[in-house]
Image (cartoon, rainbow, N blue to C red; front, side, top):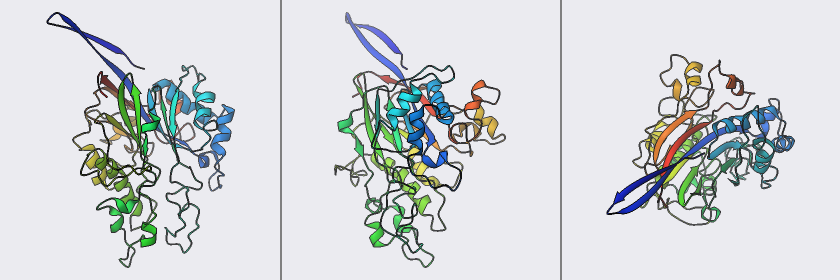
Length: 394
């Protein structure tokens, strides 16, 4: 979806033509991971999503596809979409078997371009990370919680070409290599480091991954910065998940700050340094809010207050307001469990934000069936903004 605005100016007898276009960019934690399709306490194999993608008939997935069809983002990040190296079973199956068909009267939508890559969830570390006396606990001793490799993965869908040769990923970046990182402040009850020297030598910062994915839009290059930091809970008094969430968000603060602040960062190809452009957008379920929740608020505050970020438009919905009445922040909530967790954050140089929203229909709306409970689609909502890109950005 985009519109072209033609501006004609006369100067010294020459006609100058410039163009601007509006694109819609979104993020959606779709909860399309294997355990979502099983009864509670059942062990997933990791194939559950792909079996349902092949059929094209799973109602919860059809509802997720319909939400995307109704919002119609030009670029969208999907969090919690299980990773597979076989795109034909994963992202392409979702596009082909769900998005390409009208869901409940909504127009089909096509995404000719997509990106996905491995994540750290469910990948064994070989070290006792949770201090239970074993180094082989499924989930507890993996680089990030996951019952199989690829659980809670990520996918980017795009109507515009992705510059695949220029993508940077940071799956293997070690937490210990972040200067003044909070890993050093995580302690046992006896005051000793929670993560041993051996653990720190292999432990990765990103609970899924951090991606810098350049997208080309009619000659313009914008960088999609995608991630899904760990929830700052499900740990103990040492607060290892809370501190990891903080530093996963801090990673982007440093990355967009340039040299010297970003000099310590290295990607999975060994290239050092931060972003090379001022035109970017940060997407994802960041699991943090400056007003509510259990996160260390300094992390998300540093990102939202960064001089490079445009935070003038906060997406809202009427449905969220009604879901949590008498809550001053309710309209900004993006998750059923009542918090702003999901973000679409453009840089100030990307362009003017002309509209934004959260897909959260009110109970009287006929689309309410798509989000009425956990089984309808996801416990998160699709968040989007419309940004007007000026021609000439590279």
